[in-house]
Image 1 (cartoon, rainbow, N blue to C red):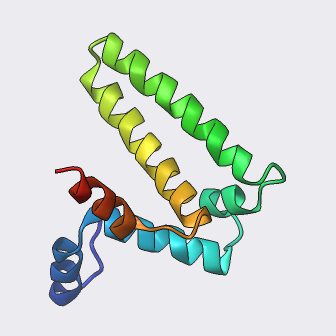
Image 2: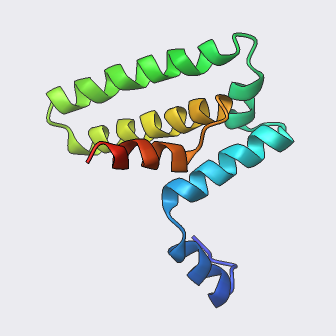
Image 3: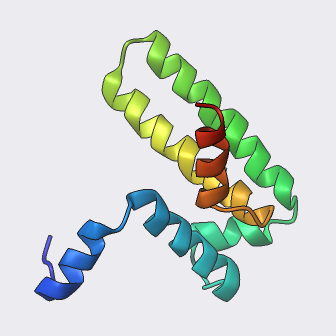
Length: 108
């Protein structure tokens, strides 16, 4: 894959947490609703929030099955799908990654 970004842009991406970057993209899609975006389709689905809740249920089942089958590659793939849909749900609820971090930190 070709990298058209300059050195400064690459360094900025490396310094940014992947969850923060993903969540910023989700928020941008929520705001701008670009056509052809899967994320946009989740925010505009006729089922509303239920569409994301159904995807979370589906992804959690697939994640559990991958773990049960000791399929590490599939486990990671399904985990990523689950986290993405969880972040979309948080955005729908006007929560963010910092709220999730705060909750996790409060449990230590």
